[in-house]
Each structure stands twice: as C-alpha cells, then as structure tokens.
Image 1 (cartoon, rainbow, N blue to C red):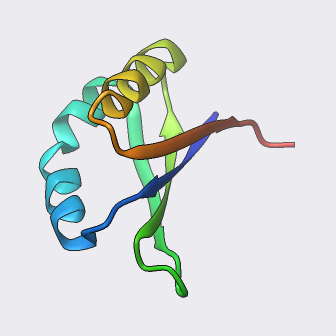
Image 2 (cartoon, rainbow, N blue to C red; image 1 turned 90 degrees about the horizontal axis):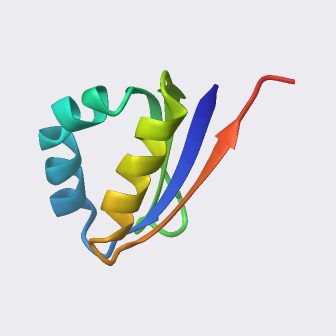
Length: 80
C-alpha cells in the first residue's frame, strides 16, 4: 500500500529541513519515503509518496502531523 500526501507550506526550505529531521519518526510509523515532488507553478505545494507498512501507525502519524495546523491531506492507494 502507498500513501500520497499533499502538504501546503508557506516556507518550503524550513518545511524540508523539519521533514528531513523527522525521518526516524516516519520510519517508526511504518512509512518509507518513495518520492517528493514540488508543484512547478506553486512552490508552496509539496506531494510526498510513501510506502505504508502499517496503516494504523500511518493514520496516527497523519493525525499528529495535522495537529500542527498545517494544511495536509493524505490518500491511501493500492495498486490496481
């Protein structure tokens, strides 16, 4: 299973530094980063594709991240 998250951040550089620093926390949530994209027209929009090893832990991670107040939406995906 994969998960695609769209994150809206007013300061990409600060967000990316914090994101990189949280690597171990995402790993403990059963998430492996597969790809990061930045919107070519709106640099404040970031898309991150994760491999999900444990959906319940991933959902807990989403709830915690959304609690910081930033705009983030995540969709769980299965290969069709």
